[in-house]
Length: 358
Image (cartoon, rainbow, N blue to C red; front, side):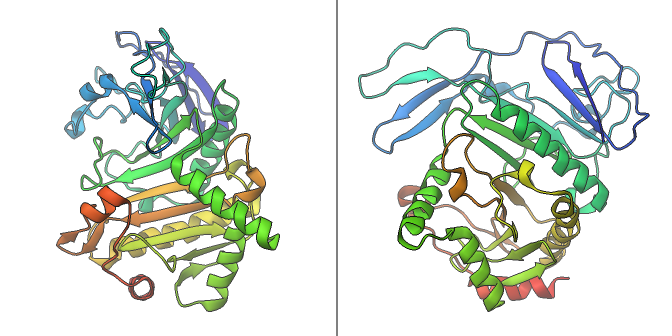
């Protein structure tokens, strides 16, 4: 894989990850752009012990443009986009409308003694999986999935070294039902200046389990799921895809490596090669459930940068809000108000349906 870094017209970084060593990526960004916005504001909620980002500049971000105005397609002729090259394999660049960034203008003023405020220090990046606007992740060849995984490993390592970053989150949103604002196949990476609430909860459970048993909680849960087999959707030598026994979402699958690893950079070559074929199989099963593109979120759970890395177990959580061909799962009173999920589909039934959707 060839890695080439350039600077966009407003100073943001763009990195090409090419599968050909002879790829030339010297095309300049010919646009005239305003400077990137300053970092957002983080406000602490003392009632939940969580940080909330206030990023008002994101209100004006690009929203569902027509295909001929897609900012993630390659630049061709006078049609200029975020990608200056006329073609690419995988491209990663700093988000033009970031929730977090390293561009801190000034320290925010205190709101109340109970609500500390600080700059939204971190970084947000966009990961373009292909230059084909009409493709999807499920349509990528396994070799391209390997390139994407190598790019995520590269960026996880680089972002983990930025000042103040405590956790790196790689993810993909797919479908307008999920809330995507660009149709072009792409994912995102957030580098947070704190450990996220979900990860803190999971690590807390893992720590209590380790103190009680000496084991790794996720590794032991994975072993139990593999032994039971009831909720396993697919597997190979290095990975297993299964529906969690307490799945929150109508269709939810964890794709986990058999060997505990804290993050994507820790995966070996054989594990990285084996991921693509299995994951593509699961994605195609998702699309086959209702014979239509399935809206989903694919979320990589990685260890924090500096703390509790020995407790973590890398895995990809894939889930959809679609519960039937013509019905969506809404986060209503119990889920949104109290954080208590109510699932309409038994996890065992979901696994059965996914296995049948080959």
